[in-house]
Structure formats: structure tokens, C-alpha cells
Image 1 (tube, rainbow, N blue to C red):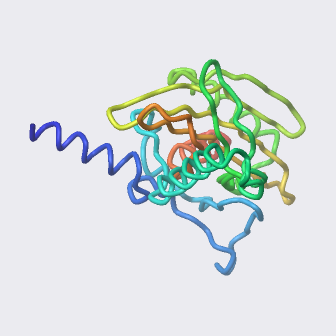
Image 2: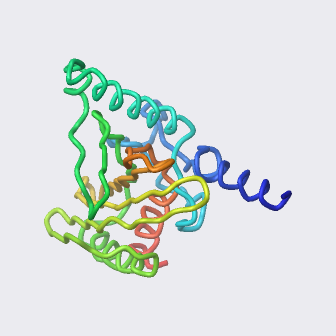
Amino acid sequence: MLKGLVVLGLIALLGGCAAPGTPSMVSRSQVGMDYIPHCQNVSPTAQSPLPFTTEYYLTTSGSAVNEGAMAGTREGLAEAGGVGLLALARMRPPSRVGSADLVARGTPPEPFCMLIDAPSGRVSAALSKVMASLRQYGYRAQRVAADPAVFETDFVFRSHLAARWTDRFIVVAEPWGDGKTALFVQRDIFISRDGSPYLQGSSVGANETWILAATRDTARGK
């Protein structure tokens, strides 16, 4: 019994809490730091706060609240027979992956990003190696493009005692002037609890930072 409580406590900590997986961030107000707009800026010297993790869904502490609000809105619309048009307009319609319904948030979370002190060609080559390494975790490339470099994986389904989830990565590398490259990592994470549809959560940024830091280090020959 005690062992089960410890396991559940660990799941709650790593699965739904921001603290253990929050990367070192850069704010616009920090003097001397380059800042990339429209994304969550990870420090260019940051190391991943966790190893690449697939045992937990790694969403922020407020993500479950947002999921609950999405579920409530979805149920309310069904009960109202389509009366809640304003709420419906703010929600994108569900899509499907296999037999799973994925319900996206009206405003998607911002991707995580890092400014890497290396030219885009070198970063793109490093990124290709890093993304290929994700195959050991079940991620397969669904789309690869160049100029700018884009890598998109397929969705991977996982589960533990508290929930089921599916996620994928979309990574983009763009030149940022003066031999630097802006690298963006978007993790689309959808969580299903108690048999509900998969509702979009907000990723804490741990695995995104793993990809950012690994690409930076590979581009620098480390």
C-alpha cells in the first residue's frame, strides 16, 4: 500500500507539476540577452532539467485546470444543444489520430526556443542527428523540410496509472543574424483522463529543453 502511494506521489510530482521539469528561462527584461519574440525563451546556456522522459506527461501545474475547463465547455455545449456559440468559436474542432479524438485549445501554447551561437547550416545538421536519436523513444519523422529546417514527428501514445496521453514534436531552425540560429520546439501534448477525449495540455518544457540543449551541444561539437 505504501509503495503504491509513493508511486502515485511521484506521478503527481513529475506528471503534473512544473517544478521538476522547468528549464532556465530568459526574460525580455534581462540586459545583454537576445530575446526571440512569440516563444518561451530558454537560456542559451541551459542544461536539460531532466533526461529525456517518456514515463510521465510533463505538463505544467495549471494544465489540469485548463483541461478541466475545456472538458466543462465541451460538455456544456453538448447539453445546450449548440447554444454556446462564443465558447465553440474559441475552440478548434477535435481532430483524430487513429481512433483517438484530440481536442485542441483555442489558443495553443507558445513553443520553447533557444538562440544558438552557430550558423543555421550547422544547427540544422545537428538537429537532424538529435531528432534521429528520438527513434529510441518511439518518435518517427512524419515531415522533414529544409530552408527553414523543419522536423515533425508522428504522435506517440503512452499511459500510466493516472492518465493516457499522446504527444509529438515540431522543431524549426531559422537564421537569426550574426551567425546565430533561432531554434523552436513545439510539443503538442494531449491527455485523456477516465476515458475522456484527449485534451490539449501545456508542456512544462523539459523534453523541449533536452532537444534544444542537445542540438546546441552537437552543433558545437560536444
